[in-house]
Image 1 (cartoon, rainbow, N blue to C red):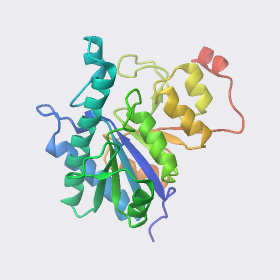
Image 2: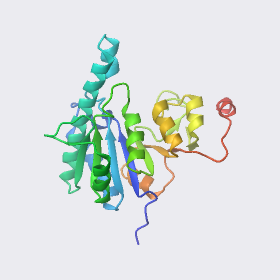
Image 3: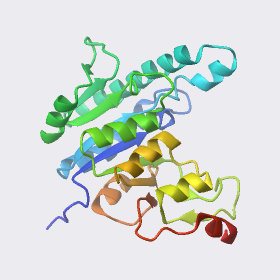
Image 4: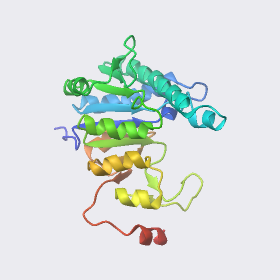
Length: 252
C-alpha cells in the first residue's frame, strides 16, 4: 500500500540555472529530467505548482550595473521566465502530465493570464500549473512570486530546489567546515542573514505560516521524498520555542 504524501499541494521554486546545460541556456535533457521528477509527485495525486526563474537567459542585475534602467532589466527577466516555463510545460506534456502556463504579463497567444480561481481549478484537476513572468512588477524577485502564489492558491509548503542539500552556515563548496541546519525559524534566517529567499518572500511566508524546504534537486527522487515527508534538506518554519540567533551564531 502506497504511503500517503505529507503534503497535498506544494509549490516548487526552480531557479533559471536549473534549466541550463553546459552548451545551452535551456538544455533539453536537463529540462526533461526536471519534468520526470515533477511527474513522480503529480502521479502520486499531489497538486503541483511551479515558479521558474530566468537567470539562465537574462541577469538583470548585471545589466543594471552597466547602466540599464532597473525596471527595463526586470521586465526582460520576466520574459526570460516565460521561455523556461514553456520549455518545462512541453517536457511535462511529452510524458503525459497535463500542465498550464500562467503569466503575470498577458500574452494570450502562448499562455493563460494569471487568474487565481482558474489556477486553483487547474490544481484541483491535477494539472501542473507553471507561473511565469514573476508578479508582473519590477523590483520583485521570483522568490517573492513563489511565496505570493503559494499563499494565493493554498499550497502547504514551498519546495526550493537548489544545488546543495540544505541551508548552511556558509557556502559548503567554498568552506569545508560549513555546517548544515536541519531546521530554522524564519526570524533566525533573517537575523543570521542566510541566503534562503529575499526578505520580502521570507516575511510573507512567516506571516502566513508557510514552511520552506530547501533541498538538493540533483539527487533523483528528492522532490518525491520531500513530499512524502522524509527529513532531507532544511526546513524553515515557525517554532514554538525560538532559539537565540546570536547564541546560535556564536556556537558555529
